Amino acid sequence: MRKDAVQTKRKAVKSFLVALMEATERQKKHKELCLRLIRKHLRLQDPEVVEAAYEDGVTRSYPYFSERQFEVALELMAKSPGQAVVLSHKQVVDHRLLGEITRPFAGNPS
View 1 (tube, rainbow, N blue to C red):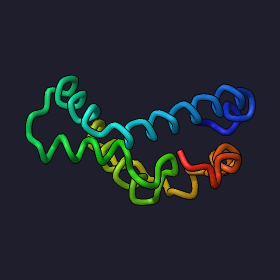
View 2 (spheres, rainbow, N blue to C red; view 1 turned 180 degrees about the horizontal axis):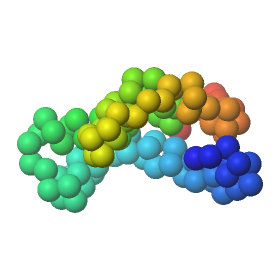
View 3 (cartoon, rainbow, N blue to C red; view 1 turned 45 degrees about the vertical axis):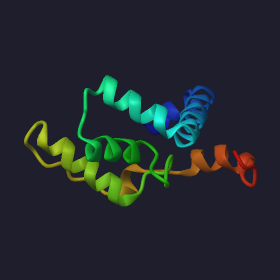
């Protein structure tokens, strides 16, 4: 998201991120339901692929976007138009807003 959009729509962005974080926590607590939904809606049957899709959704670093996740995203983006995207993690990723959101929840077990 562009920096100016984060500033002008800060409340909505924070609400969206909190909802995303809460959904991820629910995924972690209800793994079997998530696996069943992945099989149904993504039409996947291979247990290894289903498990990988689940693990991708509940990555431990979430909602923080690690440098490796960023590199993988760039690799996937490059496959679509067939042209490499040259960006660095530091140019694009800023975790300050996430820090604001997660600070009040620190120490609160979910």
